[in-house]
Length: 291
Image (spheres, rainbow, N blue to C red):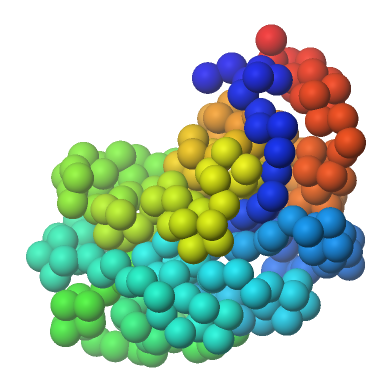
């Protein structure tokens, strides 16, 4: 869809943000400008919420610095929790689908992680991205020989690979195999997330709107991943990061700078707090080559 000024809501009362690749840098740093931008939102009476592929436990370190009091969405919406991480809603993969997903990934020698409850399970701690994820979420994985009964209550299964195009093909294969039995989308170029069919950011955005008592048309969203497009489609205003793929950028109303160039803070100032968003919209469309 080609963005145009009429697609953008004239009133924004809430901003919902993706985390990795959007709110934080690739080194998982929450910059001073990002914190200041969220503080400005609060000062203007605009609510702020986060939604992430991370487990809720891996979002706790962001809540105090950003003054978050809204519901917290983890596992792409598979779990929605209060600020103290008490579960409000939870959607688990069926045991059959979880086992099928692991088998499909194993068949292509893709590294597999399983998130179940508070646990993150891996079969090899030395495989790519394990230590990186450990630093990201702030806790260590549990090493197992097999996933066993954890697949009876899996929040999310992740396929991990350093071969980005290879993983993109696996995304297509797994989505076709599981059809409407799961949501299959990459949260990053190296992570393929498999969650409950209703554990996606679009459904989660609708649930946030209900919990906050805010119309979807008054919610702005910002993200960088393919899994963020589902919330772009339901929001009143959508912003993609410059580090997003061209397809993700085309799905948004606006494109801001990258997560290494304070793109989140710039988006808040230009597209959320601007007193004349319609003029900014026109400038943005022309600047990104959109007609």
